[in-house]
Image (cartoon, rainbow over all chains, first blue to last red; front, side, top):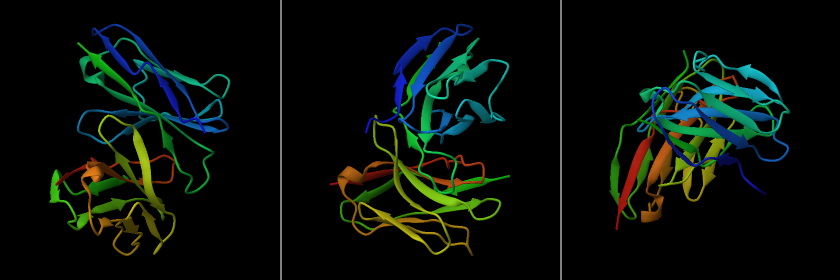
Length: 115
Length: 111
């Protein structure tokens, strides 16, 4: 079974530029998550989708971050304009659904460096 | 609000030593509890989980027991190997069906 796919793996941009990350979850998984992991910290949830609807985006900095999952399958996370503090690994994850105790599977992450 | 507290690392052990990584949490209700592991250069992988009080999750020689009375989910392994060197994250499902991660504990096992 293919895992969660993310691209690009690595990206270096200058501050105030924009960047987009793509994620393809495990086939059949209805729930998709984007997490931000700053070096030395644990991942922090940015946004959670159930199919093509947003369940929780309370921790997404909406002035610069946006995410969509238009057809309920793959998803894109965009940052515009980027700040130095956005340097982090952006992790996409998916689970079968939002049932209690379901395992959440993670991709390998997209590493962003803002200079 | 909901939070997770893990023991600070790095934890440095010799091969075949006993490992304990402490984890306590605060959450509304009784969350499902997870341990994830991140090997160098790799993504997060589920190590084990427990979904109700007194459940014991186990995998690859690691174990953790869901202790409702102490709101804890400590990770243990009887004999660590060099290949266990990684960062370990405790993560309860705090009711939003999303994980809240601790800061992670880096384990270094020396031959």
